[in-house]
Amino acid sequence: MDLDARQPPPKDLREIFKKLQRSSSTDLSEVNNVVDFNRNQSEAEREDLRVVSSINRSRVRLCPSPQLDKDSRGIATPEMADVFEPASLPGLYLIPGLLSPDTQVTLLSRLLHRDLADPRHFTNLHKHYKVPYDQITPSAVYGESPRGSSTVIDADAAMSYSFFSIAPSASCVLQPHDSAVHKQLTVGQFLNKKLRWITLGGQYDWTRKEYPKERPPTFPPDVSDLVRNAFPDMKPEAAIVNVYSPGDTLSLHRDVSEASGQGLVSISIGCEAIFLVGIDDGIKSKYLAVRLRSGDAVYMSGASRYAWHGIPRIIPNSCPSWLAAWPAVPSLHATADQHCSSADNLNGSSAFEHWRDWMASKRINLNVRQMFDSAQSNPTSELFPCNNT
Image 1 (cartoon, rainbow, N blue to C red):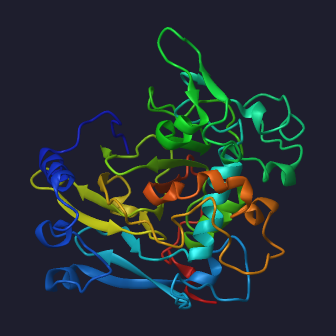
Image 2 (spheres, rainbow, N blue to C red; image 1 turned 90 degrees about the horizontal axis):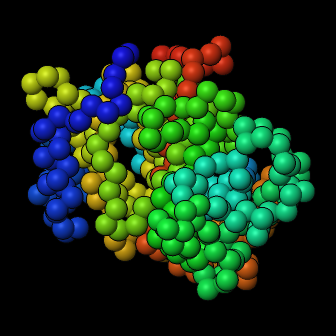
């Protein structure tokens, strides 16, 4: 499909986006007809939203364990997660609470400890700053090979380094490429305010709106397995990890730069957000606004693969209490699992105490896509076969 990544969104969707952006937290559900799976659905919502499948949560984990995960109240996470599809937007699938609390903590730690510390993955700071990887990651972990290399010399060690091991007040700084244009940043400024995104696998060029032609870093295999266990008809090859704070937005856009029409996966961790998605039929846009919570997932496929979507609002003070203290929060499992890494077991250690409550005002969104069609893609009419144990 030949679509322009620079094309502006339809006027009616822009107006709805602005309305949601201006709304207070208290009137989002009632006044603006935002779907909220934590309240009783209206008659119109019940008519539109259909449960079309379910996913077994035990298949969507990073640290397999026979022990059931429990939420912050000590209640076991339900075994199955319902998959909703709105009749008005076919191909759009909403899965509330797909990731258990423990899986969320583990995934968050791997993305923001291990993957942020990997010099092969770009961030929004790379264009203007020298990111001080040498302060946390010895060269013995990642070789001096070209950026596109997928070689990790010491995979276990790579899991144990983190920018969060540096205190916010430490002297370590990010030096600008051009000091006449940008000032140096402390690590505190870097992690608290300036870090907006990390790219995994295919390193998307936001200026040119395209993927570079050189070989990208390997997509993290464990994150790929997690995604494919829930959404087996797509192959994770590129991802953007967005870092939001209250007041931040993501403008309406379409993901059209991939040479594949396979579905897009979005996973939310941390503070709640309003997600707006719509399709322009040339007369009046069909749209849905949803309140996404920590652990929720969205899958955009079929007719909704190229839908307009964005985040008009982050809800302040909405991070789950069991997650808010991250990275000074332990794994929710009392005992270490043999499948978990050393970095997973670092959660809650004294090394991160100076960053306690960092997640209380953050939302992390993992957006995964397939870059190219290949024999490893598995298009199937049964999108969610994980409903069987």
